[in-house]
Image 1 (cartoon, rainbow, N blue to C red):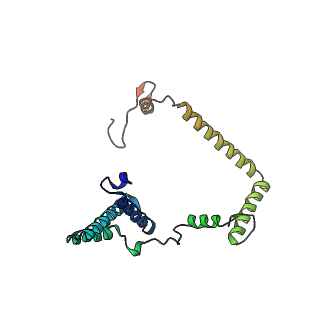
Image 2 (image 1 turned 135 degrees about the vertical axis):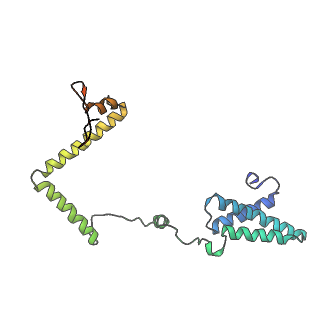
Image 3 (image 1 turned 90 degrees about the horizontal axis):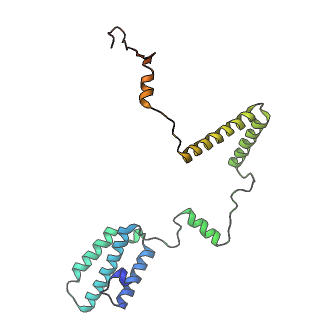
Length: 193
């Protein structure tokens, strides 16, 4: 705790700081390093205010105004307080259900609604199309084999880092040289270049 809060606090003050900080973390929606830093500063300021009030210091107002400013800037208000009994996401709902013994079977081949019926109809249609349509089964199988071989060739070329011998200058000049002579470009209605 001394590493977190500093060396200038005694054990009671460190416990007070830590308890207040835990309370803020449990009750407020604190996200990000900036709000964590503001929460720690708010705890330190709260401890300083308490110490000054006990000592009878008259300059508590300066610290109170700083305290209020941090509360407003960090939005540590009842409006932004998190309710410990609420779920923030569906994952928390699922976790709670599993923790209490409810395990959902998401798909058990039972038609329950229009979407399940539509999915079965599409599967049946595709199956009939593949089996009964002459030649389409072979075309699909051939296409799958071509995709597999293309994928395998791509993986092999990346493993061995194969690059074709390609000279861009030779490629660019290929269209302009016929029998060792360069072609002349002649625009329409113009001069030979």
